Length: 126
Image (cartoon, rainbow, N blue to C red; front, side, top):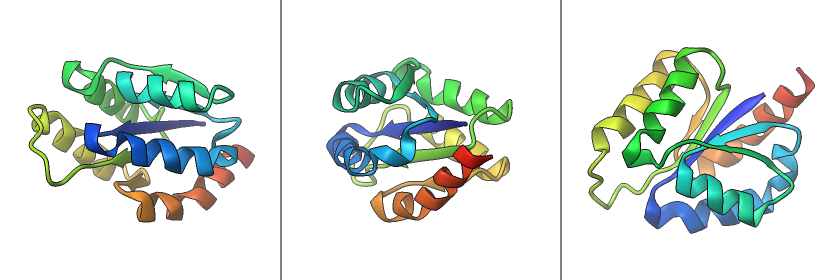
């Protein structure tokens, strides 16, 4: 199954640390990530299957949104930085709106991402 992974710049290290600790939950899944985040995850966890989209501000958030609309993305983990302005905030809001509209599990921080781990494990069995 396909899982989306994204992180704002100031949250990328937190996401990498989290994925590294929980890497076994992602093995056997296809991970689709925005450009920079995907490159960092691939470097940190080379055994994971990572497909990189464009960088978020260059359309990567919209590409992930399209995968949600097509029914191809089954969960989204997006470590959001709520304290920094983002020039592509409209794209971020659209991605969150699509995750909500299509009722896919969505985590925006480490605590909520931890709650998704059993769901991610169940996807592998499906």
